[in-house]
Structures are given as structure tokens and as C-alpha cells.
Length: 197
Image (cartoon, rainbow, N blue to C red):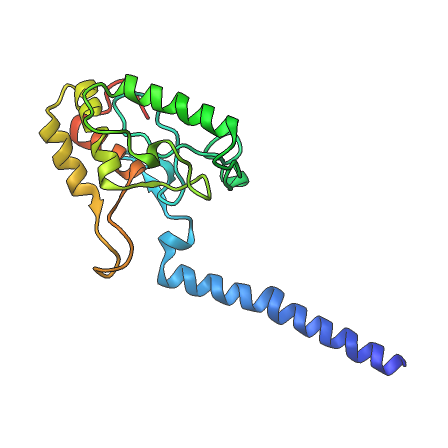
């Protein structure tokens, strides 16, 4: 019996060292060597080199001179430690009230926008942290951003077009715009009037 216990303890120790220490260290080393930016969280820096966020996690932008992301149901909003959807269904009064309030706010803040409010501007993603918008949802906000920055719609639209990323490998997924990168590009091109986002 003692022999079996000793063998089991040795196997446990070997497994712990291999899977709990060696394997994670090797993978971390490979990731740091092959793609260090992604391995360290895809951090985004402003023009002065200060870390302002991650291109993988959305942030709240509430002033008119910045593009706004999708709403978030993660924690108190855009909380990476509480990622998740609201789990509110189509019959939920709370969801209906929030969407109605968001629709009213978006229409009030974007009087020049044409067409209906894009659905993704009033619906949270499954994680609550999606940092991307579709080009049409970003385009819907162009007039507001241009007005707030004292620029022409064409200038802001050209910047948006430059920040739009196509499909992966030319056929996977849909074109997207990273809201944080787009807002940093606005500041770089037109100045950060009124301070940081």
C-alpha cells in the first residue's frame, strides 16, 4: 500500500511540474518571442507613449467629439473583470427601457444622422466588451463628431475610412472599426480639443 501511495505522489509531483510550471512557462516564452504585443494585452498608447487601453476591450466615450462604442452590460459598464451579457430577453421591461432611453439619447445627440439608429449602438455584445463597430454604425456618428470638432463631414469620414479594417484573410468576418484606435486617430489628426477622451 505504501508503495502505491509513493508512486501516486511522484506522478502527482511530475504532473504538477510539467503541466503547472513547465508548459505555461514555455508557452509564455514562445508568445513573448513570437508576438509580444499581443501576449502583453494588445495595449494601445497615445502620441506621448502613455498606455490608454487595450484594442481588445471597449471603453466608454461620452463626449460628442468622440465616436461611441456599443453599450456594455459588463459589470458597471466596460468592466473587464465582469465580462458578460445582461441575460435580459426580448420580453424584459428593463432591457426595453434601456434601449428606449439609448435610442432617445442617440437621436438627440446625433440630429444630423440619417436613417434609423444602427442596432449595435443600442445592443450590448455577448461579452459587453466588444471594442469594434461596423463601418455603418461608425458612419452614423460622423456628422456629430465633425460638428463637435469643427471639421467637415468629409474630413472625419476620410479618417474613418482609413481606420476601417477589412475582412480577415479577405473573406472571414465583416469589416470593423476599432473605436479606441479611431478616437486616437481623431486626436492625432485634429487635436485633442478639450482634453483626453
